[in-house]
Image (cartoon, rainbow, N blue to C red; front, side, top):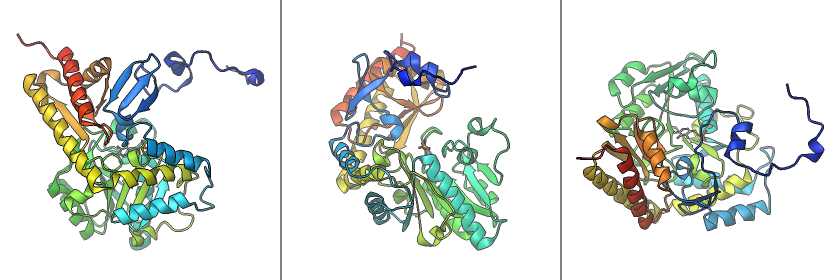
Length: 417
Ligand SMILES: *Cc1c(COP(=O)(O)O)cnc(C)c1O
């Protein structure tokens, strides 16, 4: 047992802050790579050993404008000189501006701010339940979600998410949650009824392997929700903020959700989450129903305003689609030279490469080989290599990244005779 230190007055900074110390002081729930980045610029990252990496991971689809973007640094510094935090006992200019911007750019008329994606989803799910209670009574509390979906790590969101390995082992789960096969209209038709208060889905399942929703399925989900007075919640935490080539991916399908959640790239790497909804539904989030100490923080909102100013332009979204096509063409031609992928899929700069037969379960090996070649990538499950570079990545960097990837793949594939 450790005793309360009486030595706090002479606490000294460890002379080596490194990965070994990390393992001594952090809870062991992550298994980070051994390298430790110290600074970044655009799509490049440097580590403590002076190595440089090309970043196709962007902090898990977060750093939409790359690292240390001059305009984001400026927006953050300017806000840091003025006001950091006031709580929701007071209002602040950056948050009001951001809410107005999000309403102007989307279907929404009301915004709730949080600090992460999970919290945005937590708010969305609580709102859907409360809205149903307000309008239809307590029996209408069913939530329909999909196998392999991911909605965050709070206990409610992890139980709504469709990967049991993340929700098992924490005691009794909240009830009223059903999981169905994704993109299966028949299963949804059979399951949804008057007791359903919400259907929640990702327009492309991110953590679940970059699985795009079909046009038919999302349209059917919209129609069935309307018919059964259930709210359609779109989790755009990974697909949003330009990553799909649309500001929010629902635009692609010509439908509108009742609630949309956004996070990850919204403040380009500063923690933020937001839940967007309509005026009518928002009414159920009456005074005192929900809240957050930091939600709507002026620093986060000031940066998010700048991110949206830059990302929400025709030109930026067009370049995302052009870069997506370039990256996919490069991946296809790697695959022609050494067949390793069964499918290359995804929208915009959120691309999944699913491995084929002899390479099943080896996505992590490819990731490690990429790191060795100076390329940071992601996986989405054991079989899918996931690429989510900054939207600002250059065509040269895409070409270089493809070269590094091909070199890494060559290490993993069995050489042809
Ligand atoms: C990352 C993610 C979340 C969780 O966001 P956090 O900021 O980690 O809480 C939720 N939904 C989707 C689709 C995500 O990709």
